[in-house]
Image (tube, rainbow, N blue to C red; front, top):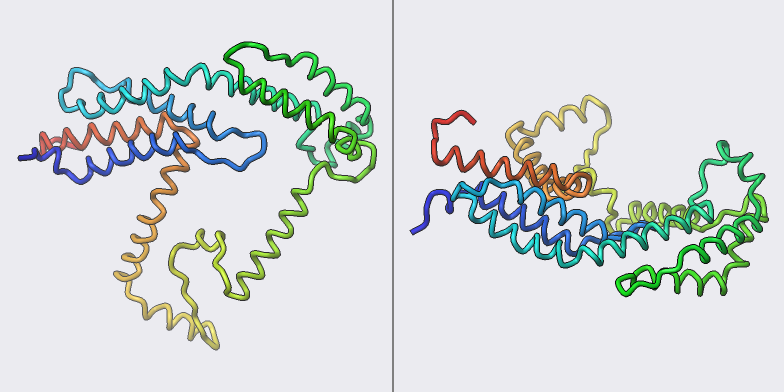
Length: 279
């Protein structure tokens, strides 16, 4: 026989959100240049462990949260040295970006700096970085891989990379061109109806098409929709967007997000124990 605390749907939903945050930290994807999903996931998991560690140990109702915190802390401690290695490699990658003066700032703000920048200066800065960044420790595999890959590509493609500093107006990458092609493809899909685009998700899961000859006729069609049905569909859209919004808050501030879930968990348990307690 289960207790009312175990049967409560809100507690189950909060605990499911906690487990989802932990699972998502282990496989956090990223496509941004100079950003490492594994390191971000470790920092997210570390913040979750810190929030779970603050749970009051004397309360017997917190037994589930304490058991949940144990494997999280074990994973954080066992991967701490690897995370430090990846963090150092990430910092080395940022140093390469600074040597290459990438990404370039707005032309109006850096026109004078660009005039003083030359390919010889960039090549000299890169050679200095290779001389300074010399990982040799046993637990520095990520830094070694970064140094090996960067050195290999610099020896093979370094002269070609320096053309953008010697030729005025030549961009250092093709991201702008790819973004233009992406917009053209999405526009073509939208007007042809062959495939849905991700931008349509911002407008919800329901698309409405009105056909009217005048604004009066359009207003009349809108007024035919009952407020109850409109609120019902708005609630469905909000429920469908809740998981995405939760992950967005989790990525921006994992500690505060998990702390808010723990506070909701404690408040709900207090309400179940004392229904007349003001929430």
